[in-house]
Image (cartoon, helix red, strand yellow):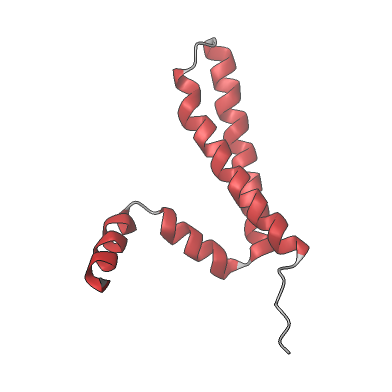
Length: 91
């Protein structure tokens, strides 16, 4: 009988931190278009950038370098067209 391999708590925490990092970077992209004052926008962008980087690197430590390399490769816009072309070639 085979046991399912479960992910450790630190791995799951790392994945959550990586997801939160992406959300922080989305906030950075959206903040300039909000109706708040320039001072608030600046603070939000600065804080989100710093927190996003902290979350990313903590998550990277918890999940391991292989997962982070795959994650970065997936998010790199240079690879988006290649991945789509590979999927259509495979069909």
